[in-house]
Length: 231
Image (cartoon, rainbow, N blue to C red; front, side, top):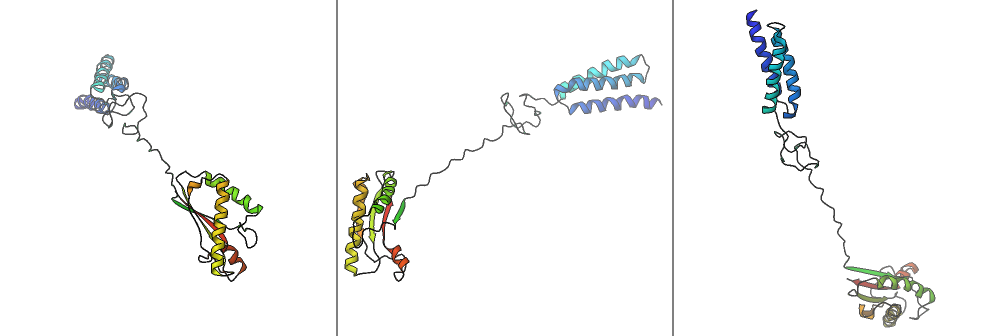
């Protein structure tokens, strides 16, 4: 019985101090309270008169032990110093479980891709029959193209080429394609597109078909004017 009375206080005291070692410094009131209860229990093993002294003595020891050996939080970020991998974090900065500010999210910069070369194909400019003269409908269509081209940088280079279907002689179609290319170019310049942007105006005749000349639909596709834009 005497062994139990001697060993029990030691076991209880060791348990309290071991538990306090895992707490933070700011938890000393909790440690002191638990120590006080334990001290009272230890004192009571001797007599009821010793319960108060035991509570005061052991409670004070436990609180002091917790303050000295407890885990601190020097920068006040809520992460104990033993786990804080970024000590000294400024007040008010949000931190992760390791006490470090989250890595900044990299700003996404959208890259503007400039198309170096583009070709505008004009197929619904039909000219007057067997002529390079523009119709009213042709001019309306070219007004839209002119608005677009005027938005290009002054350094943009424009190459205009006229194309025909295979109906008629090669030499005739060649001349007709050249006249139509110049007719389109002259109208665009008159609509405000800088003359300096045009670096070439040529006719390809029927030499570069994009569809079958044996069908009406194919021949309509081959009768076209192309404007190549080099930026």
